[in-house]
Image (cartoon, rainbow, N blue to C red):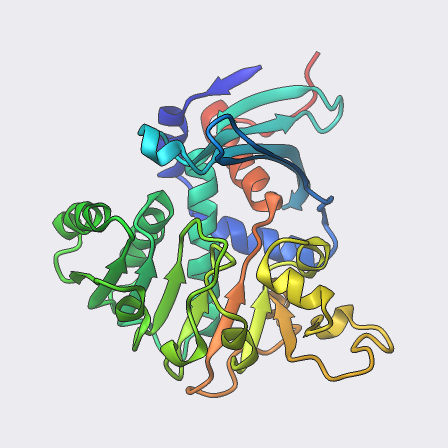
Length: 343
């Protein structure tokens, strides 16, 4: 079995257009060329009283007539940053499509951060009224850096980035690193999350919180908010949005812990149109009607922004299909051939 280290993966990612890969995965998903099972989650409290979890997220995707199958195993402990460790880490395993045998293991950290950023960037490009000039981020960890590095390389329109983190030094270090590369962008460390979010064209919370704090009135008309960490928005930010978009409705419907999943279970969220059945709204009108999945926007089955003033919230749960597809591309770049039967 081929093993690719974190350094191997980081080098190979520079050869892959991540936004193009996630777009192809969404198109495959829209045309039923994917298999996306429910993820498995093991949660526990460690001997320090910290929350830990292990996720196993399998998937299969067919792109250009070639199928790639695998799984991502990603573990996290909320206490790791205080130990000088990344909060989360894991591996992606790729399977031979004929024999089902393991053919490759690779570090998941850069893949996970890269595909997450690529989905956010693609969603913004599909839904913004005009190319973003200002970006507001809450959180200054690896995900924030992955988002900004990808976005700023693609979007020469950006002139300002406002960044807030509960550890101000972390935000300062990130703005200094990025400022050396992106010299036409003004980087500001915001003293509060509100200062980072208000008036931004694009809002991206990338935190570890499980408690919401972003209300609707922080979000300006016309803003796209990509709710990457899923629990940063308060319920009224969803109910006040002109459109709510998800990456995959089945992930929302199966979820019991994140805000949008909880709102759905309480009858406050109606699925996107193609997932609705008679009587789906119950006995009262839901507070939120999900407008579409991202794959519907990419395939043309649904329309995105209707007005320049629309406030749009994207709630991407994260699809293992993207991790598997990106890992398959990296395997091909390294190995020179697609994953095929081995003897």
